[in-house]
Length: 66
Figure 1: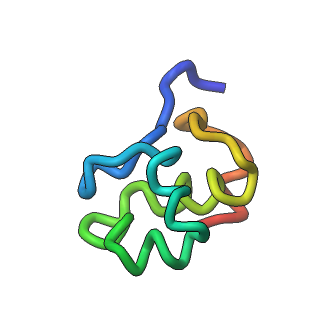
Figure 2: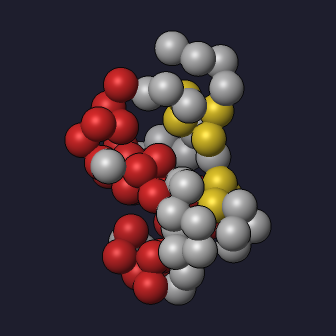
């Protein structure tokens, strides 16, 4: 796996750890996470599902969250 990590929604300027304060991926997305460019959406969903706050850019689990 890549050493490059994804750990934030650039549109909202918040880390996945900060976004988890919304309680669910649906609530975070309703607040705007992943909604402008949608670039972080698969990683955001995986972050909520796995509990991890930093994910590899090429994490093989992403295919389940696209």
